[in-house]
Length: 79
Image (tube, rainbow, N blue to C red; front, side, top):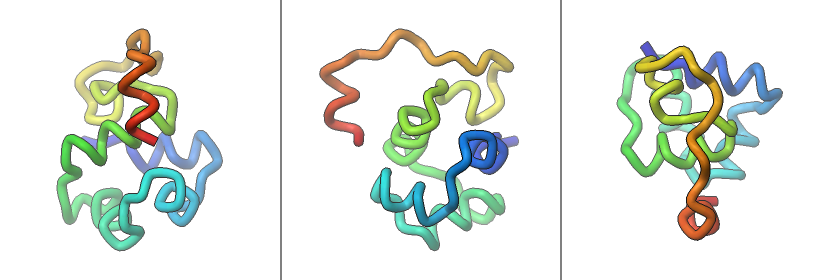
């Protein structure tokens, strides 16, 4: 269902790097990747910004990897 792990690996990040860049607890992130826990909207937004893709792609709604044009003001507050 989620493409989070696949996308993380494609981008060359470790789970620890994702935690450091997004502030998502590494334990929570690991559970999200394994499908044990659902990400919050804030977490999936942070991941989409970090990975340079859309939330829709990460959760499997679309196959289009390219993100929507960013809202620069919002992006500054995410990461």
